[in-house]
Length: 272
Length: 178
Image (tube, rainbow over all chains, first blue to last red; front, top):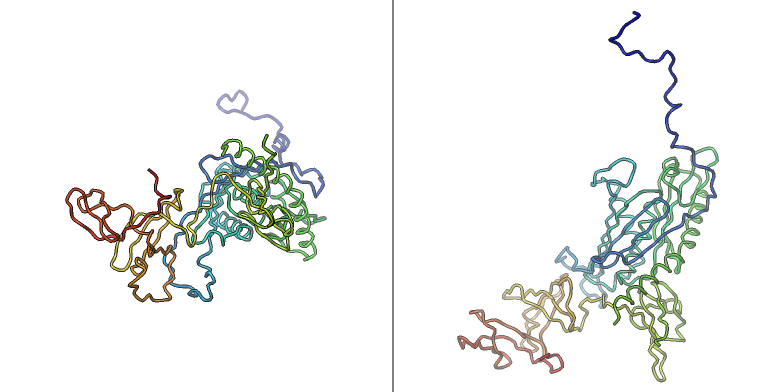
């Protein structure tokens, strides 16, 4: 009816809303599949923890702290093989307890702290990768606690946490055979699957498969491997592992400098 | 001017086994010495023998009671078979986290040991006071006053003059601080 003042009428024509939506999810521009994002690493920043490290790679920020060694809980385990030939039973080796936590503001949407199985799986992966590097035989009946806090997830979070945890352990004065360097990879989906080193969060979300490799650079031994996603030919996975190992080796000098700087800072602060 | 300090990180290859012998904070592999800690490299040049290469950290962080070390502990509970203690000091450095230990009845004296049973592996540290210079250093009598040792097996309370049996330690003079 002409002159209808009670209804609010919309425009005569209408367009689809996608025209006006901010296009933030652009397809990532083609990039060199072997590029590593510049890394900022700093050790010895927390005064309360025995050892600590902060690692930033692109948008991923991880803070890791180490405490211990303290008396292992799990008392009075009734005898393993009692002293056969003077060899220390496995119960006398030290233990490494790892904890991986994602801050509620780490991702796009707020996630409440008990993050379910994913955090536990990553904590177990951390422990498996760090154990070969730490000389647990030197800490009998003691346990070392490593806690990693992911402040922002910008891609390859587990790799960054691994590297930060190794730096924190070295900073805490825990005896280690070697550092552990982590590197993340992801494979682009079907048309032309290629493995990308050090993916960003967007690349990880669109990936068909992901892989995290942990390497001990000087000993040249793989400390941990965690992969997930769609299967593929084994050669493709082998190539991914090789790419990851190369990436880890390239990252090593930065971490070396970081630890030397932290040792120098500690030496200057406490003149003995 | 002090010579520039060389810092090293865990896993860094330091030198050949022919050029030095491994000290604390290092490990050997394939004929080379590698560092095991992030700290400063020190070479102690000995006369005749190979220099000992070790990595030092300023704060002595590996403070775990080791076999053969003398520790100072506080008794937390006593049983007819053993006493449970908290290990507070290792040597002369205090521990940040106290460890638990056990002194079994048979380990108190060097003589008159009773038979022990094998196969009881515990995850506590086993301590012994079976030497002359090991044993009780500080004790309080039932009235709460600190007691004075009068012989190797008796201590006397200065207030009530009652004597109580303790295995007293003959502490070496270098450990006593006045």
